Length: 229
Image (spheres, rainbow, N blue to C red):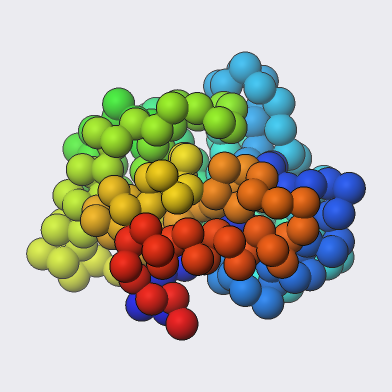
């Protein structure tokens, strides 16, 4: 698959077909993306640690929690107890606690990630860049699905690849926001390792998850010229 990974955003899945969709996607993807919003850092409320417990009953694939919260330490403790494989925190709320939380996650045998809003520069994560396992670049403003794609944020993916190569770091680079047929070519040109796919790229394409997956992968190959087989 040319090392390209897709991580479905479960916030946008059809919850009426929760088990069916998870079981099918578990045979196709490398991980699942779970948004946790507290209604304060962003105005929306979304999935919770309870949801992770429910997902665990259906799939054994790694789960990646994206914390859109004001108090990441509170949520990190809960996610460590659930052994959530990836815990990703917004750099904008980590001032003064970044090293402690990253160390705490690693000491629990889990992986730590940082997330950058579209207007947040790469320079903000340089103090911890050698410690993190994944960096997520937001190409939409956080909090709600279906927002405008912010193409300018893609340049950070290119910058992070250059830094990784120059310093021999091994973090993964992930993009989050409007990953769909219209934007696949521009995203692929920047070259993230992981594409988070949601309603516009996957779950909203048809009423059947197998058909939607087939259409999504075909859309990706047709629009980028990259072969996923």
